[in-house]
Amino acid sequence: MKIGIIGAGGVGGFFGAKLAKAGNNVTFLQRGEHLVAMQKSGLRVESKLGGVHLPQVRATDDPTDVGIMDMVLVTVKSGQTEEAGRLAKPLLGPSTGVISLQNGVENEVRLEKVIGSGHVMGGVAYILSLIKSPGLIQQSGPMARLEFGELDGTRSDRAVAFLKACDDASIEATLSEDVLKTIWKKFVFLCPHNGTTGLTRSSIGAIREDPDCRKLLEGAVGELLLLAKAKDIWVDLKGVGEVMDMYDNMPYEMTSSMHYDVMNGKPLELEWLNGAVVRLAREVGIETPLNGFIYAALKLLSDGVE
Image (tube, rainbow, N blue to C red; front, side, top):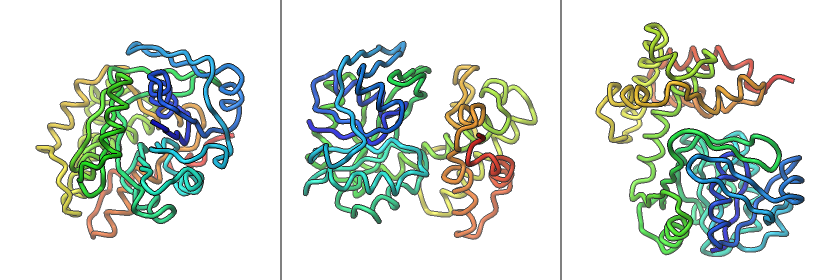
């Protein structure tokens, strides 16, 4: 299968390397030192779930060099979604699928505005992974899983073909018939987790064991569930308690991508996580003060620190 990966960071680098090792024709669109290292020495993945070493990979910063792909994975930060859509255009044939594996619930609509609705699919990645150094991806945590599907719930040929590619690459993957529910269910879990670990500069274990921080986490989850209900989106969760059980079963030391970005002065996805909660809540006329607090407290760090 011909697969384009826009963004060879923690998510794109990990899954792209696995797909390439399995024999798929994978091309990475990347830039900067990471691209230079990939072009010179290939790509390495460190993971307790199984490492990968690709001495040579197809990597470029010019989408016109790539050709038509069967599937394109968008794995850049949510703030780069429109740019990713423009980069994807030269890769699109009539039946090419474009799966966003980004954080947030607005990326699919944003991509559709750039490349049209016929190409865009939905998806989520459950993984904690990052660029350890140029050319090297480090995955930590107990899972590395994909869930994706057509936005209209159909079981398309391109979706089935990509599922087979994932299976052949030993990637745990599910073809969803209600990917919007999947995206929002992850958002309900991910947003409070990212926001509170970034805000407190602490692990999920420290947060859940501190009564005040746990209360903040629980309240933020409750606001997400309220927002989903107000938007008439079924997330298949029984309530705050079920989400808290997920947090309670995570490794004590687990943090988040936003925690990493705050600690390392990187730009944050805040506008598309807790900021999106505040924005979307206003549109449907509900209040989300705890997510508003997290958003305000981190907002001045959104662009990163030089």
